[in-house]
Amino acid sequence: MSWRAILIVVFIAALIGLGVWLDELLTARAWGVVSGKSYSVSATGWSILFHAWPIALAGLLVAGFLGSFPLVSMYVRAESADHREVIEVLRSKLNASDERARTAEERAKKEALALVSESLEDAEEYKNRSIAAFREAKILQSSAEIEIENARDAVAESLEAISQANRRAKVAEYKCSNATQGFSRVKRKLGRN
Image (cartoon, rainbow, N blue to C red; front, side, top):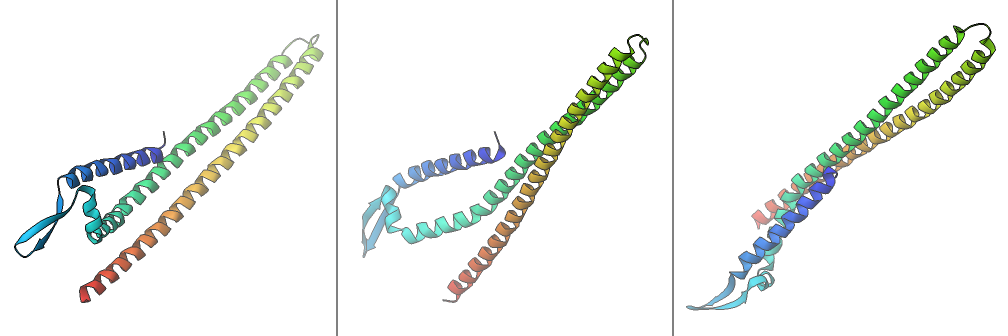
């Protein structure tokens, strides 16, 4: 399971937990209206939010604004960890392909040397075998080179994806910074009024 999926599951579980906590909190609360020396209850439970919508909206905006920073940061880190895992898998495949190519070449060389050292009577037969083994080695080597090139392309694509993810993270940080500055301006304007 990828780190991004785990993060999303944890986030959903946290939202469910928050909903349960709010339900328990609001069922034991009431919204009252004071007139003179008497008061009356105008709402209980979740209907309190209808009467106190400015407070609820402000709380939602502040919590969403403050919660988005760590959530975006954790998501970017999880995405980077997933990309690192993919790169490691591709690197291991590349190393395995290199090893298969080296083994095939060594095996072909050994077979060719063994065939040359045989008697002169079997020289023609051994010559044909060595040619066949050499062709097989070339086929294996070209196949391994294709696998190596594919693995390198996949690594390059993964590195580009990481680069794009880092760029998106920088854009997100820039937007967060702008949002923070905008929030500060609004806060200062509200402080003047």
